[in-house]
Image 1 (cartoon, rainbow, N blue to C red):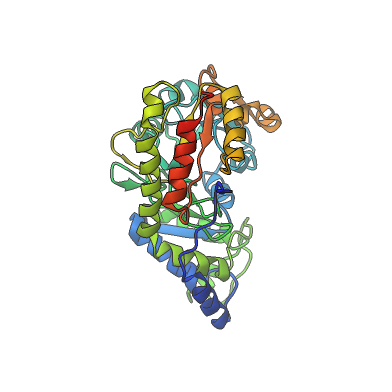
Image 2: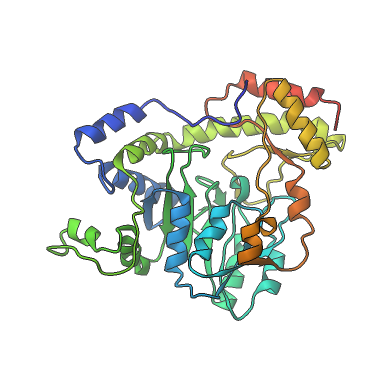
Length: 376
C-alpha cells in the first residue's frame, strides 16, 4: 500500500534528540527550541517566532492577543480545520463564515467586506494547500476597518506571497508542525509576529501566566504569576526533532515540489478532457508542495475513485467537512451570504499521496492509476 502520508525523517533527528538528553534540559525553551525560532526568524524575515505545542495553541495565543471580547465577530472560511474556529470560540467570539474561491479553496476576499459589522474584530485567512490567499486585499480591508489579521498558515510553512513568507504578513501567523505537515515535530506549531509590543504578553501567555522568560534572561531576580496563561511550550525532544528538519528546509521543499510538478504535468491530459480539475496557483504565489489534490465531477465519483485507488494499493483521502455544516459550527457561527462553492467543491476534492520519502516510482504508479481509471 502506498500511504497517503508519512512523517518526514532526514537523518539527524535522533542525534539531536540525544544531544537534548545529554544537555539535561528537556522542558520547554531549551537550546533546540531557541535554535528553531532563530532559524525561522532568519529564513522567513520575521521578528518573533514562539514555538508552541501545536498550531491549535498558536491560534489560541493569537486569538487571546487580539483582545477579543464575548460577542465579537471573526471572519474566516468554513473550509478549514476545526482549530481555526475553536481558537476564537474559546475567547467568546462569534464565527462568521464566508464562501471560498473555487480555484484555490481559499477565502474569497471579495466576500469579506459584506460580512463586516460593528462587532467584527479579526479576519482569518487560511492558506489552503500552502497557496497564499489574496493578502493585499485582505490587509487593505483590515486597515480600513481597523481589524486584526491572523494568518492560519498551518499548511503554509516556507510558502510565499509576493516575496513575503506566509505567516509574516498579518498581525499574527500560525504554523503547524504536525506529522502530516512538510516539517514536523510530531505535534507542534509556532506563533509568528513582527510587532515588538506583543512579545511580553505573548511570553507570559505561553509560560502559564508567569514572567519566567524574563527571569531566565536575567531581567528579574524571581518570577511570579502576573496574568492569564497556559502551558504552550513544547519539550526539547520535539524541538530537537524539528530542528533537524528545519536545517533541511529547502531539501524537503524541493522533493515535495518535484512530486507536485510530476502529478501536475502528467495529470494534465485528464483536465484537458474535462475529467478532473488540477490545483490552480495564482501569480505572485510560491507554494510549498504541501498538497496535491484533484477535483472530480461530484461526491459519487470521488467515493468510487477513492475505493478504486485503495484496491490498487494507493491511499487517497478527502479533506474537511465544511465547519458551518457541523453541529459546533451551527452553534458558534453563521454563514454570511450564499454557500455557492464551499460545500460543492469540498465534495469533489481528493488528495493524493504526498510526503518527503515518497519515491518517484510510486508517484508514477499513482499517476498511472489515475490515468487508467474509466469512471470519471
